[in-house]
Amino acid sequence: MLRNAPKFYEVAKRIVEITEGCILVAHNAKFDYRILKVEFKRLGFEFEKETLCTVELSKSLIPGHPSYSLGRITRQLGIPVSDRHRAAGDAQATVKLFSMLLAKDTEKTIIQESIRKEPKYQMEPKLLDIIEGLPSATGVYYMHRSDGEIIYIGKSKNIKKRVNQHFTSQAPKSKKMQLHVSAVTYEATGSELVALLKESEEIKRNKPIFNRAQRRTIFTHGLFNYIDETGYINLQISKVGKNDQPITTFANLQSAKSFMTRITDEQQLCQKLTGLYKTNGNCFNYTIKQCNGACIDAEDVVNYNDRVQKIIDHYSFSQEDMVIIDKGREVDERSAILIENGVYRGFGFYNLNYQINNYEVLQSIITPMQHNRDTQHIIQSYMRRNKRLKVMKVNGLRQDR
Image 1 (cartoon, rainbow, N blue to C red):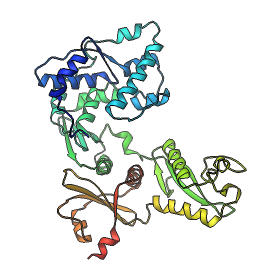
Image 2 (image 1 turned 180 degrees about the horizontal axis):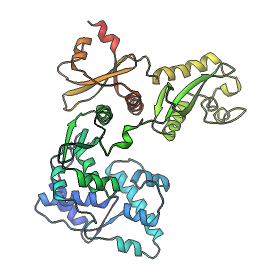
Image 3 (image 1 turned 90 degrees about the vertical axis):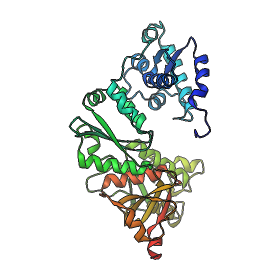
Image 4 (image 1 turned 90 degrees about the horizontal axis):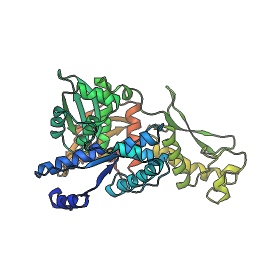
């Protein structure tokens, strides 16, 4: 996306001109302001502005929200956001949020008091040095104490940016980490899926003190099916018990409901039979002709069940033999994640000049990893989010031997 974008020095003069006499408003202003100061400092220019942080303002003017991230706070306030995590989309969302905060501060005293020449928090030199040595790459990072002990393991699509967030955050956990961290090491993976899988395994193996939450199972709800008294296959979302074998799993109830709503619409399933519409009669979609009438026994059972079974087969993990091909650490490299009979075997990397053309070659590049319910959830969730992911069937490779 940035391949043809101008370099910072090419736009620096324009930034100075358009910010002359202005206050810099940003969501988490200390992060954006520090990045600007660092870039200008490299050009030998002292960039100094007054700043206003919409995170700080939100906490003061609209307290009580569980999260003040830009995405969540805008959703909670009903602010429409398009093109999230892109410069224009996030900037427009911040403008709308700031306008709402301006309206709430009727006396304008809170906003006046929040204007500051420098952000409240200044990063320690040792933390700045650590960040300077990190890449803006996808991978897993490890925070170490002075004796080398790992105190935190994380993954990110941009390691430098994520560690910077840890080091500038004022959250109690982040402050403790800032006190204890002495060094940060990392392993680039290229693939976000490989990073997620490696992070999960490394946390279970090392049990870092600041990763207590991630040691527990990372999903709460699952997709299940049963056949009702009229012979239709019903789908339902419920909490996952210790011995349950769900079709697929979800991090929370909301993501499960979103998934169910999407497949119900895409496959013209019955809202009643997917648990989205509680009724003794027909579902709402039947009223608007988006359901073929399974809710009132009007649709052929075989036809309906065939569509549902395809969904179950597609999202089920139990019998899968496949290789997931994803990004590599370099442009000419790809990652391969191996699943055999529904069991995650591990991952590896290969150069595009040496294609995976048989099973022995595939096995030779795979680093063995542990299979568990968390890795299954990670892979299924990633595949649901990334519809265009390349998947190869293992049987085809075995036949080439």
